[in-house]
Image (tube, rainbow, N blue to C red; front, side):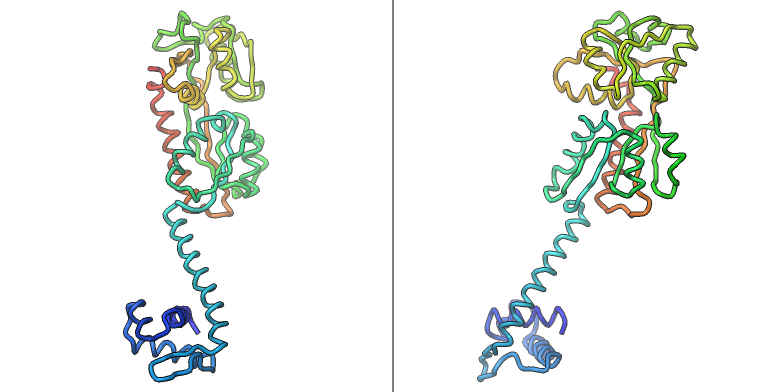
Length: 317
């Protein structure tokens, strides 16, 4: 007994004749008859009484029809699901991202990525960068996106074979109130910000140290007034003209996207000397990615790189 024989049998049961089943299946009548005989031979029983050209189903055939229909329907559903997975319009995607991008930029991108795939189920979680690495190492998520500023200690304690990492390097920008005297500069140096009230990430993040070093190189005072876990909350203080801040490009892009057509109250300007900011896309190495996860990772990385490579567009707004 095989699936082809079951499909022929069900069609005969539904139509009541071999000739009608043959027409519906686009097969010859002898081929359908042969398939039915082979099914009966494999079961060791006749499924129909023959009265001339009429076929009368025996009680056992009614039972087989119920079982065959369930099997064939499940096969059809499975084939449809697999086609959906192949075309990346069905499946699940578990993403964990650091607080900055997960607040707006990542949801906006995920929404556009899945707009034509209503059968894709998405889990989007927010964790700190060290927590993201641990979750990916535990093979708990498909994709993680974090920064490299506080991950050195964690990566030293996690075996490399537990995750794969793709790094994206960027340079920070200076965020100023739009009407700040420096807002029209093409680039701003640490010397220009000497003694200015500043916002920054919390102590322990590599970006804080790199920003401090940039000020030290110019002999300027790094006057920290506000520190936060991530950059987005600092923009409220920048808009209120209380601080300036050295921020990463994705946070700047997030702010501008949130504003939409509204006139931004913050101006982003190139900052010198360079303050680097590193991003990392991490995936579990012991669980191969689905086609959906692989496509998302490639498109998200391309999107992030397009922002990093074109900070001029951010500064022009």
